Image (cartoon, rainbow, N blue to C red; front, side, top):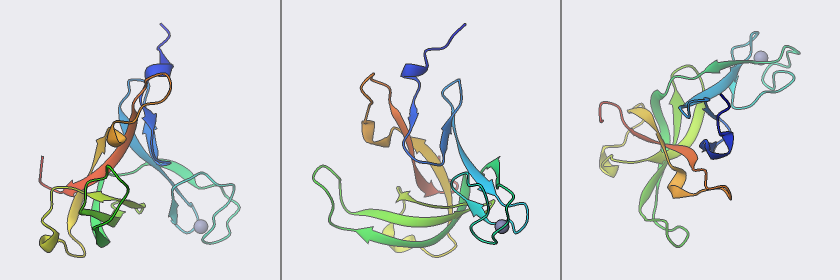
Amino acid sequence: MASDTATLPKPAHITVRVGPDGAPNIEAFRCGDCDAVVTEQTIGCRACGSRQSPQAFRSPEAGALWTWSVVYRSYPGIEVPFVSAIVDLDGGLTLKGTVIGADHDSLHQGMRLKLVFDDAGGARDKEGAPYIGFHFIPEGDA
Ligand SMILES: [Zn+2]
């Protein structure tokens, strides 16, 4: 039975993959020579120059806060303040995203965070399919 792929959620970020059942995951690519991890498939490794194409793997969806900024000004319709952060996921991938549900004063380098998929602000494509994005919450929160 053919699925209606036009209405499947669309990734709103280069690392988000959506399975045939609509379930999202994070895909990254690792160099077999130097273990560098990148967000996209390349024909060689940008870190070590290896001509072996980095191999895809499913990234863990938890990691440690590296750095962050509390943003007080943004586009109309974007609620402020919010926390824009760089998170080092377990497994080596580094992602930028928003941290939700954390007291700004509690943020600290190394704080454990969990990636949560979301509806990318409710945006839809011209066929009405939703987009899937992500944000981070403190690990241990629901
Ligand atoms: Zn490499």
